[in-house]
Amino acid sequence: MSATSRSAVTTHVLDSSRGLPAAGIAVALERATDNGWSRVGEAVTDDDGRVGQLGPSRLDAGTYRLTFETGDYFRRLNVDSFYPQVQIAFHLADPEQHYHVPLLLSPFAYSTYRGS
Image 1 (cartoon, rainbow, N blue to C red):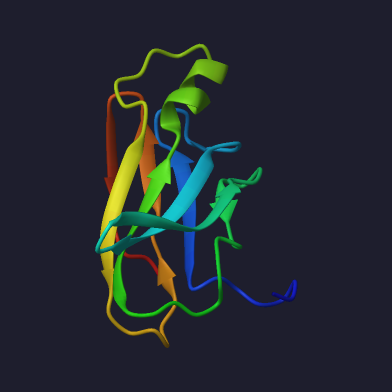
Image 2 (cartoon, rainbow, N blue to C red; image 1 turned 90 degrees about the horizontal axis):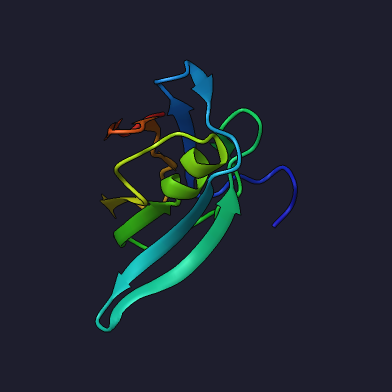
């Protein structure tokens, strides 16, 4: 993959409790298979809380999930938290589209949406 190509799936994590990007969170992208889940890609959020390279630039239609290692992130900040991981499953319907899945995070809550 060239440095200018973008993954089919990207993400951005914002720590809403601090009002800052959440840097250093490990993120895994997996695809659902008949035998469970298969790893497609992995990365770590950058200083702006973003992951722009998280697997191939094109994925087949199917069900995928992102797993964010949020417990490690809050431990590094010495902050108690409730969710050691956040997993977001979603359906990728059109292989030609880009899918951006942001995560708004706090120690005891999270939300997500399909971004652009």
